Length: 402
Image (cartoon, rainbow, N blue to C red; front, side, top):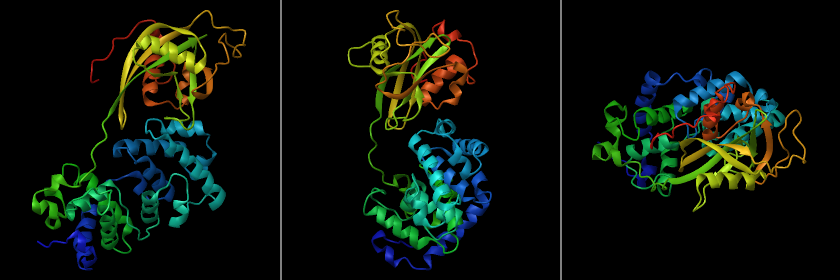
């Protein structure tokens, strides 16, 4: 078996690239997944898929992609949509700044490129929310330009293939991977080759490698050395933070109070039931009364505990204690009421940019953080049309780990 030391990447001969690309492209042709954006490779479709698939599993990404395209079939439709519509379609994918950047980019494409997605990689890179990898992916996959794509899948494949023994996203490994990617790219076949490398990492060269199915197994140095499960070398994981928090559902005149998070906050621009972290020495009941007063100026008391929702995010796990609340009689209504209701207004917002007393059946039209959406669905149904039985009967708390 031939060995190709990283320190001598410049010695990688022209004869090596076909030894990798030929079996890889043949494998891809036989095993590639029938993904919807591969039907015609529209730049718009490729762009949306690449943004959606960041931090999202493929099966889930496909579902979101199809829903998005049904609602917004063109760049012009994205540009014309209001932000609320964009965030609702994105809800559940997380990282909502990506959705807002999509919106900004669509408007920029309409204004600067006549509604046609630009093919020049520098122009692509200049769009909001598009980094080096995404620009390379769009340029190569949508426009067949000879530009290598390097994502986590490609890093994993090359780290194993060439036995890269240092952290892949740091130097010197990062430069070695960039050089190898450029040298291995078969000219005129970037669309297929880049997808093949990523597909191999996603389906075969996974975290637990399936070496017996790999078309490059005979060339893989880490397999030859018996250390494929030790590559790539990754940085130490950041410990997951545990967060205890509260939220409250306040009803008035058959309407529910919601507020819109600040744009620069976590989940910025999404609508929530007010709440926050439990402070040291507080009970959940004390915390929700304090949070409501601090965030809205409303004096409330707990009517009942509804449930506890546990939701995992990338870097933390939240335990959310959920309460049904009622206004204390001391809340002055002299400040005025919302038109058509008996609900007091306005709140004194300190952690939000907007507020509403909204009818439950309209909640599905507002983007919400995942844990708050779970609570809304539990109380009002996914269409917001159910009665409010869960606000009159406490629900059992789920067991640990649910």
